[in-house]
Amino acid sequence: MTIGIWIFGDQLWLEQSALQSCLSRQQETPVLLIESVRHAQKLPYHLQKLVLVWSAMRHFAQELREAGWQVTYRIEEDFETPLKAWIAEYRITELRVMTPTDRPFRLLIQSLDLPCTVTFTPSNRFIWTETAFTEWADSRKRLIMEDFYREGRQRFNILMQGKQPLGGRWNFDRENRKPPKGKLTLPEALWFEPDAITQDVIDWLKQSPAFEESNTYWQIEPFRWGVTRSQARQVLDFFIQTRLSNFGPYQDAMITGEQTLWHAMLSPYLNLGLLHPIEVIQAAEQGYYDSQHNDPQGEWQLSSIEGFIRQILGWREYMHGIYHYMGEEYPDRNFFDHHQPLPAFYWTGETQMHCIHQVVHQVKEIGYAHHIQRLMVLNNFALIAGVSPQELQDWFHTAFIDGYDWVMQANVIGMGQYADGGLMASKPYAASANYVNTMSDYCKHCDYNPKRRTGADACPFNFFYWDFLARHHSKLQNNDRMKHILLNLNRIASEELAQIQQQAADWRINHQQTEYLLPCTPHSSKPDPHDPSA
Image (cartoon, rainbow, N blue to C red; front, side, top):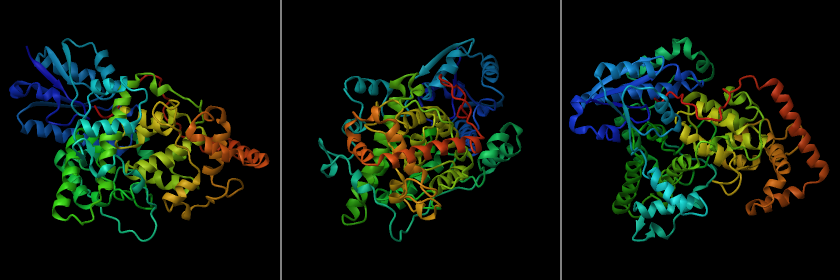
């Protein structure tokens, strides 16, 4: 009997469960990693995502060999051909795979006609197991993230004093919403120069006709992301030492030309498995405790540490749990029945709306934007303009370096687009230009007036916002959190509201004819087992 292990590109961790299950006989255990070119072509993925995943896989293969594993690495058109050849070569009778996080890969493995037994080992990439989340969710009348977050704090003893939260409060979110006013001293980010392995991936992608479409949309250089666990740990340590103490107050802020601000930039490494969420949380918590011991009156604020930990122990773990709990039909939901095509400027960045221009060009350059840029600029505009949630989800999956099926379903379908009708969010995250104007300097550089609802210089965020509320008044009127907002809608004169609605309709027609030129790959109602991360 020969056991072989197949490792996917988001499982790059020596302590992952499939490897651990064979640790006592690692020198006799064949291990396989495959780069599939064909699967990486199913969507025009960001080139920097492809570089990150494939370079990280190649580096991890080296790490496995140094640890004593018997590693085969293949670069092929598909998965099945090299997998079957490897099984035959090593006479493998049992294939072990750590249960994939993304549902499409589970389906992919199950669909393969393999001449051996397939065993899924339980995933240990997250803090909460799928079973534990299901038990928690089944016991609840509502699936509210804040409830889940508090349960996680208690269950894993994070920022706790006995049974009470450290500082007497669970959530310091109100202290973490400062707009970027005045002169701010912004911290540096930690980046890396490509080594020979990474440069080989970059050079091949630049010249390969297979990725011509991706080369049209995305910028591959400079590529500055880390590609190893060692580099990921350096980014974590650098964040704790230089950014975490001041992370909280301005975590929602947006500034023209600034790509990282105080953000940790850890999500790509967490999503590849190069870092484990519990080690990140414990490192941040320990950094706070050390600061209090060394300098109790120093600059470290509990609100910053709590806000950062909530993003991982709260939001990230919650997104993963919701993804598996909701099931296969969740990504097809479309509560508002939105079907407007995705505007071409999500691909090109060419639009007079400076906020979208700024964020999309940032994504084109590095494949990254922070959570407010994603939620309150990119998601918000698509929601109020009536864009198809499925097309937007595909774009998010395509464009972001940390984008995966499990990440984008709950974040876009549930949180960003309210397409699940409120299963996750208590109200739609819809806002006018006032939010962007408050939380950024984007409007200062824009051709549009953030205070006007109609007219040639009216910001599209404004007329689309009120048009959205008017179009969906019947669906929103019973939501307690929307009642005050709808009262403001009722105060708009009927003549002005008609003008708002006409301007929104004209915008859709004009932009559909002139800008919807680069449609995203059509969304399938079933999970697509094609992603570069395997």
